[in-house]
Image (cartoon, rainbow, N blue to C red; front, side):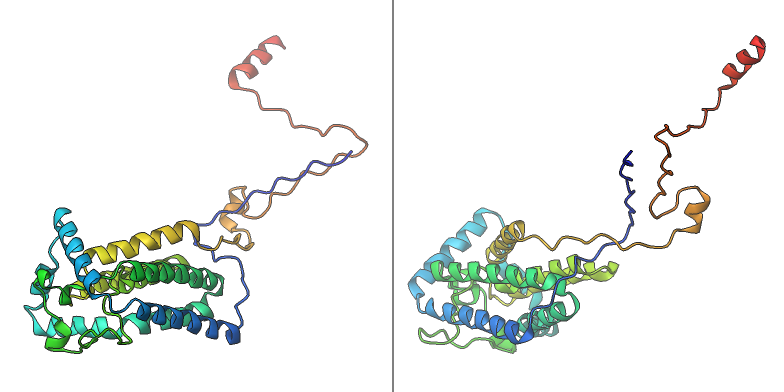
Length: 300
């Protein structure tokens, strides 16, 4: 008589589990690929340069839409930051120096320390940046520092360090590629990916990075609120399609002595020995209730 399959009891733990082991892509292939994707984005931005009239018209539309939505004025945030010269200089430095180096360090760390998440990270960044490039081409937008209607100033020019010169049609930097803000989009995704791939409770502190970045891009007059909101909406759509890697089952562990004493070891439950000769397995009689035992004694 074939034995019935033994049902294994899954062992549940309260710890986060790493994703299934994934081979790390070859560096000799991965590095040129990432560089090629970034250069394609840079030259794509340049192709959208020089659309001055459209950029200022779109700036007027964005500014009016934000006021209709009752979003706080970007000028108010800048005025608060400029109350302290030390603060506005620190914000300028953060905007100018953290954005790209932070992404490079993040990609290197994910490649070496979280190879199971790295390919997911690369594809999310590819689609996020590609979608941003499409909007840069379709919706040129003058940032608040170049839009007189915002009443804001270029804090980089006033206090340093300055990131951009006067906008020119043939310059390498497209200063009208403000919608959406990849400063915000990249910063939010760095925080999301580190929260997903790390285990430490301190990983939630990475959310400070996108919060500071959002304040920095607004206070320096490089972006509107809607630039950051659109970047987050694109990222959310990409993450809805490209989910993080699946979690692997937790490795087996030795039985816990306390669980053994409780009669419930952590490992697999041993199967009952199969009866021989085709006879049905013997079952232990169920204990009688106190009332049933009393009635049995009276009958005897």
